[in-house]
Image 1: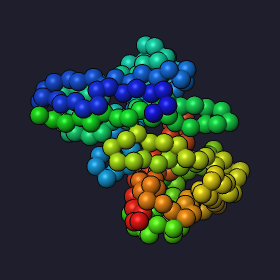
Image 2 (image 1 turned 90 degrees about the vertical axis):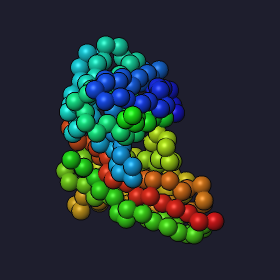
Image 3 (image 1 turned 30 degrees about the horizontal axis):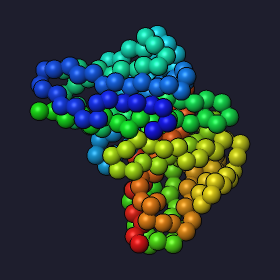
Length: 113
Length: 109
C-alpha cells in the first residue's frame, strides 16, 4: 500500500469509549487525509493536514479529533461523541507535483460492541 | 458535500467488453483523478487528467475530460475478471481531494 501503514486492521469500540486509529507514512509527504467509508458508499473527508502542526476539518469532522505532531504520523481519535462510528476508515498521504496522487493505507474497520 | 458523482452506480459486463464510467463535478478544478478499490482494501491511483487536457491514455484505460460540461469518463477496454472493483473519481476543492460515490464494476468471466 505504498508506504502508508494503518493499524489496527480491525477495532472494536465500547459505548462511551474513545479509540485511536494509527496512520504512519514513510513517503515524506506533507499532506495527509482521513476518510470515512460506509458500506457501498464513497469516501467522505473527516480531517486533513497540509503540514505539520496544522490541520483542517473536512465535511464530517464532528465526533472526531486529530493531531499532526510529526510529519510521518496523523492519528485519528473517534470520540464518544461520534454516535455512529461503525465504518471503514482510510488514511492517505498526498504526493504533489507532476505525478500528483494519493497513497492509501489498507484501512481500519471500526465496529461498535 | 460530494464534489464528484459517478454514473452508473453499478455496471455488470462480460469479459472482453468495454466498460465506461462517468463522473460529474460541480466546481472548477485543477485536475481530476481516477482511483480503483478492491473490496475491503485501500484505493489505488489509476490516472490523473489536468484541466487543460481533453484525453489521456494509460494501458487499457482512456480518460476524457470536458470542463465545459464539468464531466469526465473512464473507459476500460477489453475488460478482464480482475478489473472487478469499485472505481472513484476525485477532484481537488480548495486544497483537499473530494471523492464521488463510485461505480461498482463486475466483470463476469
